[in-house]
Length: 466
Image (cartoon, rainbow, N blue to C red; front, side, top):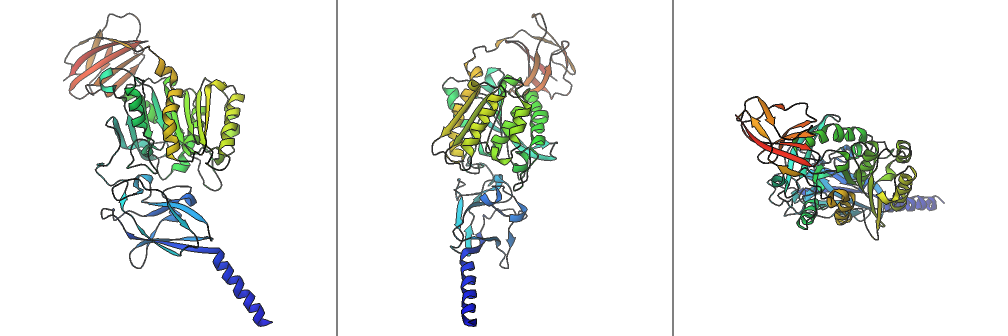
């Protein structure tokens, strides 16, 4: 009887070993230029695709190799993952800097996996960049005072920006590193620049696009509420950053159409969630929102928030998802449509698209971006009310040291005065000026263009700062 009991215990123990298994990943080879002070992380569906979770930081083993052992999972469990140095801007890449697919592992298939990392997304030099020449890095460390951190900001300029003298609408987009450049993208880029350049070549009017990189705090920044499994909750501060800090800076330094009718926001996944939240909360700032695969599942608070905030101004919403995204994505998108209609937004202002077989990835979002832009910004694209530019401004003294005075033949008040350098970058903006004098003592020596707008009319002149 004792032997029989012992056999049962042994059998049950062996069965348990077959049911669960651990795995250790060991990095055998790294790019030689990897900064010695940097840490390595494993990131995947088990981290909510957060790139720098402290729990998943790797450690050096006795052989000096980076390694990490993941907790036991049921045999047959499949995970998807990649390696990073803490952010998606430093995610691993292929030997030539190309995007690589997610790594996968099936628990129970092995207890140790050797890894080779060929390249990093920030390999330096940008020689493999796929970004168009009219995409610029506005800042690598733009201050986010509401969150006490900094962030990289990209900016796409319409192809005719430097020569047109026109002002443009602005589309604010999240996950900036995924928008324009395959070498910085997490899983392939959206090709926002290529799409808009192609539309411009077809005679379509295109906007300025501001791309805000995500960081290690992506989940927190893109979620206004907390989730018991994933945390979060800094979304309100993130939106305050966009509305109170970033947008004023963009409007001050570039030729924008700053009103709400010409301002939109777009994002995917949690970026879709924060776009919905931000556009509803700040209806006085945004008039359109692109909501790609929006993560409405993150918190049930999205429903009472939307209902209680209600409709304050006219809006346009573009919602997109695929049938293979899992969960209740399709049902939640329809529920949001119904909620928006219930609080007063017309169905004709809500575009819903469900892609058969569509998955939760950049391919789905990339292929829909052009359509989404054309629908959201239809009034701008089809407008023929372009400003008429004349050279009706006389400046004196010219050259000027401190106080510039200007004269025009137009009667009435101006809406805005812009001063730009010869490359088209705005250096001063005066809204609803009270007189015809401008303090320019802080400008660097050089030639500048002054533009005064009144409705659809733009008057222009030049002056020299000495």
